[in-house]
Image 1: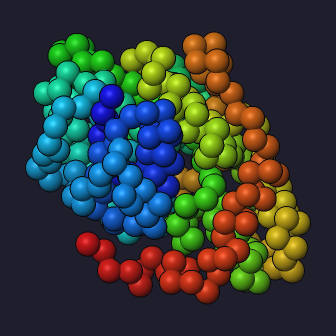
Image 2: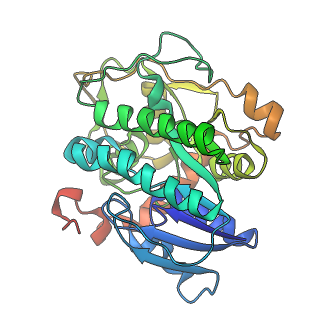
Length: 323
């Protein structure tokens, strides 16, 4: 079995690549390194089951050979990235999705779309079930990401209905763990890096807004099960245990032993007040639910970041040259 994974050098893409290789698949990875990092796949150098193509999937895309699966994980998924590169974000969600759907159609391969809980926007239904259509601002600053994923889902379902393409759609909720970029703007990395460097921990709003955090190993297991056993309709994969941002900040301070103070800033525009997946479908159809607690997952993530303090990877994303 041979699969193409876009965004293979990214946070989730690299872990997914590892899982497919461990399951006996041959993986062709594709990444332009705008947010992915070569270090994330450096351990696969010389592995005969892995090859990497440096390419922007938003442009004309050709990948040689026959594929049994095409998994589209290329995306600018963090707030820092999609706010800095809104047009690139829209392009990878639109043209990138069409390009990868075309590869899957030509190969009669299974197509897997990495979508997001952001399709639910600032939800008026809690917890969020797959049948909920969402509450998204289509012209707000976050819309480049939210709407690109909503469009990608629509494109995937159009190919499924018109061309009978075998498709899967995962709606990924907040996921964290090793290989995240230190300055990606996500709350877990923000808090950990600030705590480890002794900087004030930035809490937006009053800290009562909630998220549900899934450790990367659990998330990848759910995604792999969905690829092999799921259906064509969207499926939530995330941890249903809900925490406030202040609870997260307090736990990070405890686990790092940091003396960082907590400071508050105004809540960003369109920032969701609640986010919690209903994973009934994943439980019943895939036999999946997360196993790793937030405390254990954070401890593992903190130990990944400790050695990076002061390293080149700790430099601000703005200081990197984007290729």
